[in-house]
Image (cartoon, rainbow, N blue to C red; front, top):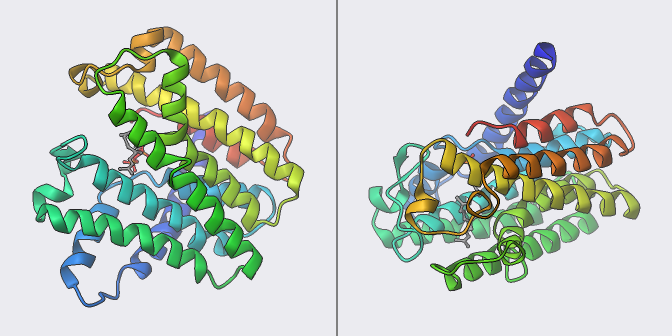
Amino acid sequence: MVCKTLDIQSYIASRSELINGELDLLTSLPGTSKTLYEAARYSLFSGGKRLRPLLAIATAEALGCPPEIAQRPACALELIHTYSMIHDDLPCMDDDDFRRGKPTLHKVYPEGTAVLAGDFLLTLAFETLAQSPKLSADQRIHLIAQLAQAAGGHGMVAGQQLDIETEGQQLTLEELNIIHKGKTGALISAAFQFGGIIASASHDVLANLTQIGQLLGLAFQIIDDVLDVEKGYGSDVANAKTTYATLRGVATSKEDAQRLLQQSCALIDALPGDSATLRALAEKLVNRMN
Ligand code: GRG
């Protein structure tokens, strides 16, 4: 077990280095506004775990595709994720002063600059996919469509809107699931699809990856709710939010997450190729401490 932990840790370290290198390249040539680039980089390099691009690269690798091909398009997921965090923290949304232990972007730069830095990262994600040099035109279009679906009005943005609309209301588990599926699950799911598309996976494998992504996306959010209580962040409690922890209790929520993990691991094991690293990453995602 210890050995496996070390293996996955060094895998994460090495692939994170590739991801950070790409993100640096993508944002190192300031356009007409140096401030916009600096603001975007403040959030992009503030200690994110890089989970989504890591999952995309590990999925591609499990299906036999080298990381060098996956690393550039995988970064589009991190660009979208970072934009969503910046906008989520704004006074008109969650109005958070800190993220990852540092002042949020709108606390360091004017609020308008924070909005625009998010907009910049959102558009850069699609530009990155359109220009990914090592993919075919078909693959690039497929990735762009996949990301638009996951991040937009059928996915993350829709989930966020539902979250705002239902603020202060007591939700059922079903309603909560719909919000989580859009807000958090869609981008995690897209990471698995990304790996499949980049590795030119068959239709059947892509369908399996959809299921894996949905299961793990939900497990990820459940654990996020549990950590909010266990780590004493308490922001959900303070905001009177319905969460898995409030609806199911912490212990049952943990069991739910483990069950979803087991189901997804069975599907990961059935993928063609060597999926041991992807499995270890999925386990890490659900058993994470932050
Ligand atoms: C503003 C359009 C728009 C969308 C925002 C994703 C989202 C929608 C809001 C985030 C609210 C939130 C904190 C949800 C909990 C799950 C989550 C996305 C946690 C952060 O993801 P990690 O753990 O973050 O991958 P790091 O910091 O590692 O990058």
